[in-house]
Length: 435
Image 1 (tube, rainbow, N blue to C red):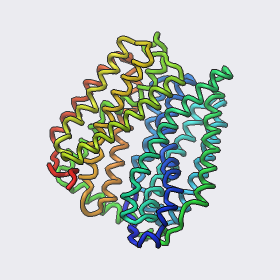
Image 2 (cartoon, rainbow, N blue to C red):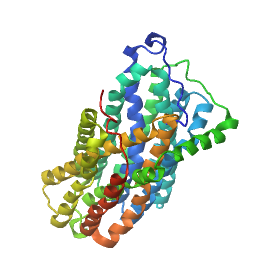
Image 3 (cartoon, rainbow, N blue to C red):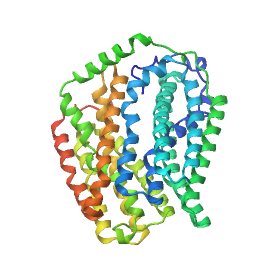
């Protein structure tokens, strides 16, 4: 997201990019956007758990990796001012590939936790900048009608990247570990694969990405700070802004804590209160089945809001993002060993999250509407990332104090702030409804 909307290219399609060539780059571009994010946010959590890092340290330090996504609106104007979006995309993918390679080199070190965290921190900044460039390029390379036509394609391949990162790569790490007897080697192989993938993507995009005339540097470096402060000031003067910010920060209060602990709970041994699943099983249950359920929930949520509007579905969605947390209470107290039962429970929770999160996204769009809508939406996404970062930081410590079973009871109690802020916001009854 950029601080100011890049000029939308409304030239006829034959003067921009032919529709036949669009599918050469949109799938790979949005696949490449999702992979670094899922690696630093989810894959790193599973890797650290399997390499012996404590839950409290994992939750605290990996939550800091959200920070670049919180503050990316601050530096997005600089991406507009220097070089083209195409240049940024190709260069950043090469850099991300090199960083994945560096992670592979640092995993075998005795101080691997500090070394890999440093690389992940830099990787998160590169990923956030890649996000800015990718979304900006999409707007520049396509006309408005094409942007709408291919939004489903970009979303689908972003989801495929999530499946790859949380599912296939986790399964690969576990398989190499079982074959070699060396958990460290499994994760080294994963990051070597990622490095090769991104170097290849950089080379491919150098050939496949079009060169739209509108993709050129723009903006006055001397006006960046003034422009940002003006736009941010207008955002803070929106009606009921305090409650808006409270909603953005607290709607996912319980989920933000759960998401850090869920894969660790699945991996931890039964003697520690977990379920003791293998790495491959977590890749299947949480990374694949869970992600499919999450996507299905989001699709259903979008369809229902399009039919009846956001206001009609706000409360059902607020409940859907919280009530399924009860399945983790059940799993923690009973500790079932039936993989089908565990997978079903995870799918129920993830479906509820996907369904409930739809309301959050539509609310951000509603808040951002008006002058500077692109910039204001980018600011909303910064608060969205902060809503995951802050609760995630203390979730590991809290779980270590309470144990898994009582921690998940606490997660259910954490629905109270969500219900409070949901009761306080105002939504236009017609918003989100198709005409």
